[in-house]
Amino acid sequence: MTPDQANGPDSSVKNASKGLILRLRRFLPYFGKLPGVWALVAVSALVGASTEPMIPALLKPLLDRGFQQGSLEIWTVPAALLLLFGVRGLAGYLSQIGLTKITNHGLLAMRRAMFNKILVAHLKLFAEQSSSTLANTVVYEVQSGSVMLVNSLLSLTRNGLTLLALTSYLFFLNWKLTLIVAAVFPAVALVMRVLTRRLHRLTKANQEATDNLAYVVEENVLAQRDIRLYAAQQSQARRFDRLSDSLQHLAMKSTVAGAAMTPMTQMLAAVALSAVISVALVQSASSGTSVGGFVAFITAMLMIIAPIRQLSEVSSPITRGLVALERGLALIESTPSETEGDFSKRRASGEIVFSQVSVSYSPNSAPVLNALDLSVQSGEMVALVGASGSGKTTLVNLLTRFVDISSGQVLLDGRDVREWSLQSLRSQFAFVSQQVVMINDSIAANVALGMTIDRDKVMQCLAAANLAQLVNDLPDGIDTMVGHNAMQLSGGQRQRLAIARALYKDAPILILDEATSALDTESERAVQTALERLMQNRTTLVIAHRLSTVHHANRIVVMDAGQIIETGNHAELMRRGGQYARLYRLGLHEGAPKTEPDPTAKQAT
Image (spheres, rainbow, N blue to C red):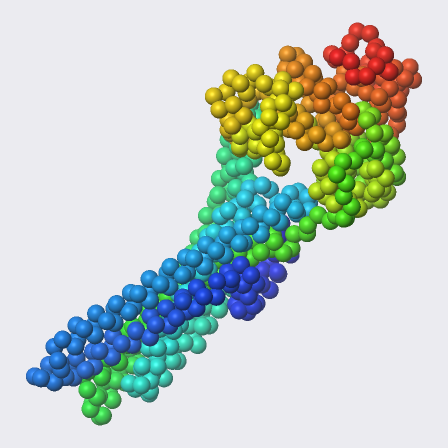
C-alpha cells in the first residue's frame, strides 16, 4: 500500500493542491537526464509554435495585394507556403523523436529503480501489496503514466507557445480586440482547476479499483482447482462483476469530469469570438480596416480555439500520468529497505543460538515466539515438531531475517544475525520445502540460481538429486526450459530439482520444510535418498509435519504456543510419554519403521 492509499482521501486532496512544477521536479532524476534531447524538443516546439501566426500573416498581403495586377509576384505565395509547412513538419518530426527517446529512457530508469527496490524491500511490502498490484505498478502504470505525462507536457508547451504567438500577433493587428480574447483565459483556467482536482481524486480511486479487480483474477487463476472442486464459480463471478461494476462507475465519472472541460472552454471561446466579430464590424465601418487585415485577425482568432481546446484537454492526461508515476515513485522512495550490518564470512561453521527470542507481528497480538532459548551445534540435525501455529516456521525464518525479532538475540557463529550483511548471511543457508518455486528459465539456470553456471557441477548435482536420467532424456538436456514454475515436471521431480539447487549452493546450513510430505512412496524414496546426501556434514534444521521423518535427528525440539516444551531424541521422548509421545501415538508416525532405531545411528536409510 502506498502512502497516499494509507492516508486516504485527505492525502489525495493535499497532493492535488501541490504545484505542478514541484510535483514534476520529483521525476527529474529519471526523465531529466537527456538535457540535449530536451533542448532539441524545446527548440522544435518553439519553432513550430512561431510558424502558427505565419498562416494568417500570409493572408493579409494575399487578400490586400494578391488580386491587384502586378502587386505581388505569383511564385512568392506557393514558395512561402512550402517553406512554412516544411519548417513546421521538420519541427514536429524532431520533437516527436526526441519525446519518444525521453519517455523510453525515463521509463527504463524508473522501472529499474522500482525493480531494484522490490529486490531489497522490507518484507512487509509483500504482506501489504499483492503480486498483481506490484506487477501492475512496475509494468503497466508507469508506462501509461510516462507516455501520457510526457506527451501532455509537450502538448502543453507547444500549445502554450502557439497561444502566446497567436495572441502576440493579434495584439500587433488590433490590441483592443485582443483584450476581449484575453478575458477568456482566466475563466478557462478556473474551469481547468476545478475539474482537475476532481479528476485527481477519481484517478486515485480508479487505480485502487483496478488493483482489486486484478487481485481477484490472480486469486482465481492460482486457486482454479479449488474453485472448480467446490463449485465456487458463480460466487467468484459475482465478486468479479461487483468489482467490475465499481470500476466501470469510476471510469464513467472520470470521463464525465474530463469530457466537461472541452465543451465548457469551447463555449467560452465562442462567446469571445462573437464579441470580437461584432466589435470588428463596428470598427471596420469607422476606421476603414482592410479586408486582408480583418480576415487575418479573424483567422488568427479562430486558430486560437484549437490550442485553447487542446490545453483544456491536456489536464486529464497530465493528472492521470502524474498519479500513475507518483505511485511508482512512492514504491521507490517510501518503501523501506531491509536493514543489515557489515559483518561477512565466506563460510560459517553452522553454530546457531537463539537467546530469549520473542516475536510479535503486531502490538495487540499474542507473541508467536515467547522468550525462546535454543542452541544448535555445528553439523547437528535438529527437528522442530509441533502443531500448526506453534512457531516452527517463524523460528527458522529468523535465521535468514525473513522475520525480525522483537526482543532477544539470534546468533550465527557467535555474531548477531543483525550484524551480518544480508548477502553473506543468506549465503550460509539452503532451503528445501514441499512448496517448490522455479523461475521460467533453463534447468541449469534454476540449479545455479544466483550463481555462475558451471555445467559439470550442475550435472553432478542433478545426478546426486536422482535427476540424471530425466535430464538425459530431455532433447536439450540441462538447457531445457522448465516453463512457469516447472509445472510440466512432477512434484517429486520439482523437489529433487530444489535439492539439486541446494547441493549446488553448498551452504553450511540446511533448512528442510518436510520436503517429502506430499509425495507418493516411490517419489518419496528418491527424494529422501537425495536429501540424505544433501544433509551430510551440514547443520540441518527440519520442520517436521510427520514424525516418521525425524527418527534419525540428533535432537527433536517439540514446540507449542511459541515455546519449547520438550527436547531429546526419539527414544528419549517416547520414554517420557509427553507431548511428542502423544502426537506419535495419534498416528503422525505413519511410515515409521517397525522398530525404534538406535538414536546414535547417523542418518540411516
